[in-house]
Image 1: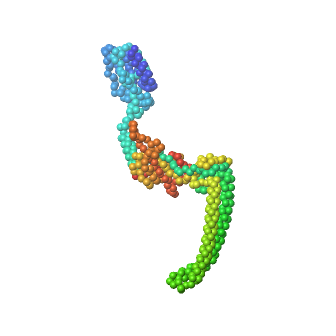
Image 2 (image 1 turned 90 degrees about the vertical axis):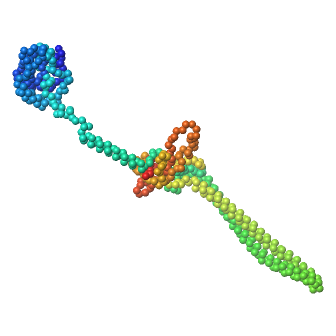
Length: 484
């Protein structure tokens, strides 16, 4: 039974190849021909049926001995020819022999069972050469070309990595960077109702361009009142100036009229002094009547001179009064002019204009809206912008002012802007926070601090102009500083 089971297993394993060899091979019944089938493990029925090997004469089946093949040379030639035929027709059906596929022992061959036509000999079936169907190829790692390619790839990777490392040492970059600018917030200085608002949302404006107008009811009346006060004060000033001129003329006339009495009083006083001097020397030299007349004349002329001087002083006082009136009129003119200027300023404040050139953003007003002083109604992003890049403190070793910077804006990844280092803050950002950290107590964990670095855009014919792109404060950028 073991031989039968083994024959059936061999038949299913051989499949088509065994069938082809069986049908195309020579007849087993012919004596002296090659039989490619496997011998049955049962006992021999006859010499012709047992095929290639025959049991020696006089030897029993139990011995398992086989007879020497007859005409071995002819059979070998026929076997080689038949193997070539099998290889040419069904090389793809190459059979892998099993380790336990061995010839039947003498005990199996002693069983008296007929030979099965489908049970072929595995040892005699022609097999396909492994080198011909490609299943026994040389491993790829044993081929010289494999190692040449591997070494070349490794060399390229090493050289490329070294060049990349040397190149990256020349630059310092960070993604903690943003566009910054002095945002101008527009707010009215007076209250009122808007009667005109320019439609300039997200549009570029120039310095001095009109943005909105507040209803000018009160300031116009104030300006008219101030202008009337200026006219009145001007008239008063003119009148005071005329009074000053009249007083000056009167004083001049009085002074000219006072010259004669003053001169007469002076002469009379001199005559009296001479007579009195002579009388002291010699009383007989001067009569008493002459002395008395000289004294009376001196007193009379002195009184006239004093009156003339008082008239001159009165004229001077009138001039002073007229000048004070003129000064008062001049001060009133200045006050009225100041009121007029204030009214004009108020009227000017009713017109909201752009203080700088830039883009209007965050507009929150419309025609008819009521605004109060100090209320923000819109903002302007100026054309002058810069980059605030927070570099690690370990990246500032070779960073200097004026170094070139390549700027990549996240919104425009295909555009490469240029800039330069404008300033480096002296101190980390946390030192200027509202509540700076206190590391004097408790556990301390060292954290690399960041230092703000200001980078300005370069504008020229060789560089993209950031003003031509919608770039604004807060947008993320990646600056790369060439430090070496």
